[in-house]
Image (cartoon, rainbow, N blue to C red; front, side, top):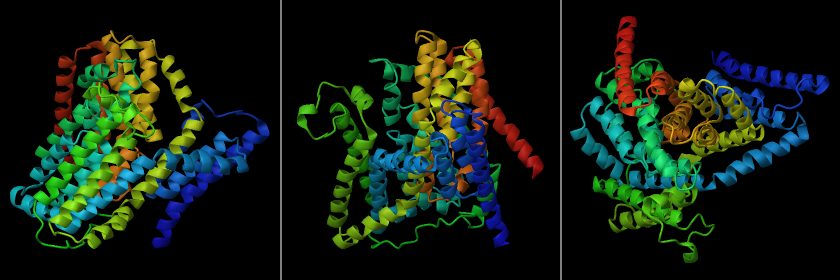
Length: 541
């Protein structure tokens, strides 16, 4: 049986490699395809990686094969150039470009280890078990806590996961469901929060001085993000699940929170039983407050390389302008370092841990984040290889040819954004490609231009949710301590359901560009869809 399962995982990868090699030989000898750059072939590497990950349930080798395919295509199947491109343009560039995020992940891992060691997480779990006694209560508590942390999606994923794992475990909610609740509130809430790292990123693609204004005008039309919230509340109150998630939830009721995979719960005993709920709440508030301040400070430094240089600090920038100018890869690690030092001082002063025990949490926190860092490195490398193939040129040309269908353009842009984000695993890269195109097609005085811009943002979040190589998806798996492929396979049917209703909503908005008409209709359609799915699922059961 084990041999058969291994064969099922290996055979598809061997076939893919053989197909790519054969393709290269044919191209080399016939010259039928001179260059895949800027063509449909530019999306081939991520599609290969995603397909293999979903087929084989193994993400590391699938991502690596996608990187190799991208390297081969970008270098014309020259083996020496391919190795160099994969090394420098892929992995080295990925590590250097994501170093700030890696540091922040490690810092959060250390904070989580400290919270466990000091007994704060266990104290909160005991408190929650007395006050949150049902699955509905635990699910809604996770949802609302995720909504409260709207500053940054990475910060959201890991913080909500660390705080809510004890609560959802006691309520017999599967880790896959917890990962979905985390993922479904992380990116969507950041995408509709004017003060967030996402709003700052979107503002950077708009004309000077118009970024935050355009972002706020697009919020009511961000159907995917808003309908995701309706979906979560609806499916929680209606007490049903469907697709692969139903199996995981049924198993969780029997005590199996994982169903499959190798990720296990953190069963480390706290160093002391003196931990209180405040020993979880105070460090989390401290972490949030310092990270918000650090993002604000870095924004006022106008993106200077050395953010501590007082000569670069601009006190005239307001709060919103500073956030529009900030760099999360600098601000979050800086805030994380300060918060970690203060949290260690707090726990040692409270005599919940000794200084030696606090230092022992540093390697534990790092080790806990190694799988997430490894996947994120390989996913970023794959994005870099796709960038070498100039996929944005292909997408721009495809959208330009569809400009005649103006009323259907929001729905078309939504689907295109979904596909790009799914294939590349990046929301920011997706709206970075599409927003300039939309601004070139529509003046922002045109309501249809705002709707199309919102369709870019909504589609980017949707594709990001479905993609196994998305950084937010990876962070949600890490925050929930859930097997990554389990999270992807259980989340996808839910994300596709919301995407289908959102697609219909964008068709409606294309003909009726008034948000207070289109949004209520979309919400009613979402609720009606849930009732239909529940009836069909009940009939099948």
